[in-house]
Length: 314
Image 1 (cartoon, rainbow, N blue to C red):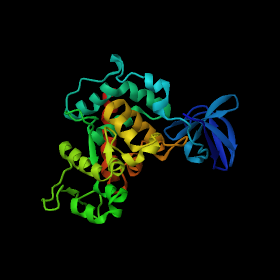
Image 2: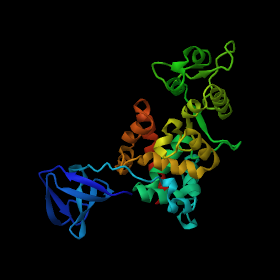
Image 3: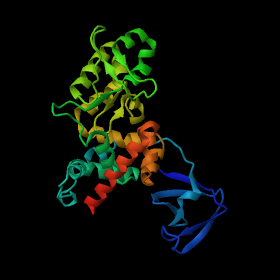
Image 4: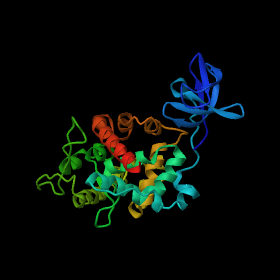
């Protein structure tokens, strides 16, 4: 991960030889001093101190280096070469309950790549397993081989409908008070309205119709694959167009998983989502990833899956 620089905010901050208040004090830092943050642990930063390393309480250091990362994970050779599955001795089991099969199965299929990516952005891959399971049950594709998608009517309104309100109103509906709810579609103005979420065949039918109206706007209005990343985030993942993101995600689960980590990291040396996962603050993570309206629900489910995987991993 790119180098991070932090500034001390406490009047006097102890540097210890281990990430614990019981650790020996190696020295002190004053307010405003700059430190190189090498690793983030639970409540602590590992920093460069002289020719060695030390540990300081993370609450009293603010990351100030926001220099953009010049690369994307999908461009890195080590990521491209990483095996998809973990080695046999790192797979988990036995998997008895439906929840264990979902969480453990996700790791057993993708854990090799998840571990490589987690090491790079300094996030426990258990968190990525939990997110994938909540977003799509750990699957990136339907049985028919097509990528799992969700068409968001309210996003299509933002991307296209507000400039074409009459046509939009004839074919798409959503609840203005809770925009992610009440999604209905009809392909003909005289046809009855029908819901479509929960049926991948219908999701693709709606997408196909919307693409005829505006291809780019339609693709920006769907969440894609295992991580369910919205198409309008294509630039954050390093893609020149949403069509490029769609084609890659629809071709290979590897692109979906790598895309999740590029999305978490963003363009900077760190990001609020990465930091939330490092703190195991799943509510704050879900606020950024899923939106405030569903943060409690998604945050709780992510935490539950995370804890289940920790038990499986031992």
